[in-house]
Structure formats: structure tokens, C-alpha cells
Length: 216
View 1 (cartoon, one colour):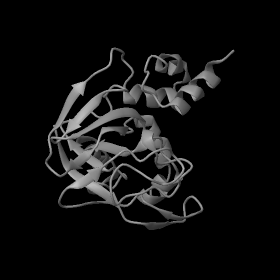
View 2 (cartoon, helix red, strand yellow):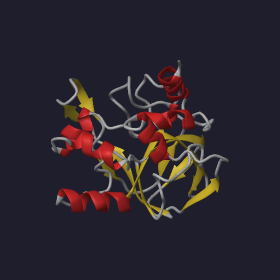
View 3 (spheres, one colour):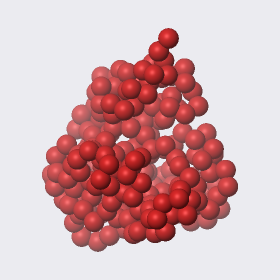
View 4 (cartoon, helix red, strand yellow):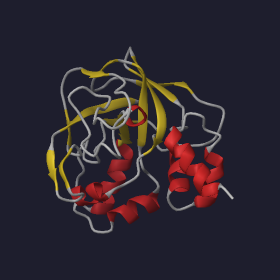
């Protein structure tokens, strides 16, 4: 498992969500990129130096510090969409090769390169910016049906990362809540919601959502 690319956002106008800018246009960069915990949501800070979130209500912060997507899944979407998809086009910071991103367990930890350790926190949920950026009507529905959301990660140990760094799983928690299962529970399969509370590393706001939807 390794990083195919490390991708940093270029600010773009965001006509799809009524915001002035979006950072979804992620482009591969050369050289090392510093990774550090960004602090709480609400400031736009994210985990990679040089990047940021502009929809500060829904993106950024410690639980969404870094977003990873598998090259293998991008290739599958490219075949379906009938056009090439470059690394970073889904707004991912890390494009991986050989990593089962959607099969990763919530709370699983990855060492990337010699220093950085990231922890899988939750799936990405698609929004109107994502659909508009890809210029594909019905994209939110199709992406949701496929349940290949990619993973948000929090920063456990900071440091530098770069293209071709190895990715190693250094910890797997004792439950079976994967990124894909969490995504399905939060979107189309509400009957799965109670399973999610077995994952202690799930963000607190996600746990509260589960509790509200399953109470009574």
C-alpha cells in the first residue's frame, strides 16, 4: 500500500452551494507536505499544510483533517462515467494504491511514511458541491448507492508525507464497523445505525446523530 499522490486544494468559485469558494479542486503536489491536527471544526483548518475548507460548517476540523480515496475506486468510476479521473478529482488529499479504504475500520490507524499516523474517523457524505464539480446530474444519488465514500482521517502523529510513501496499518480495533458500513447506515440503511456505536472512534457528532435517530 502506498500514496500515489498528495493533493492540495486550489480555491475555486462555488456556485453549487451559495458559497464564494470551494477547496474541492485538489491537485497533486511535489515534495513533502506537513501534516498536523487542525483543531476543532469551524475555522476552515484541515490537516495538510497549504489546504483549507471553505464550507466551515460541514468540513474541516480534527475529525475531517485528511480525506483519502483509493485509485482503484477512481478507476471504477472513470469506467462508469466514460472519462478519465485524475488523482485528487474527488477532493481527496490522499490518493492511495492497494489500500482498502472503504473496508477500513473506524478507528483503524495508518502509518504513512516514517512519521505520520492517521486514524480513520468517518466516511465522506456527498454534497451539492461534489455533484456540481463533477458536472453529473444525479451524482449524489449514484455515489450514495455505490457506498464507496472514501475515508476521513484524524491526525494522531504529525509529520511530513509525500508521493510514494508506504501506507501501513498499525492498529485495527476490535469491531466490524467499516467506512462503507458507517456510510450505508448514515444514508440508505438506517437499520444499521445501532451497529455504529461499537466504534468508539466515530466522531461525537456522528454518535449523537445515531442516538437521535435510534431513540425511542
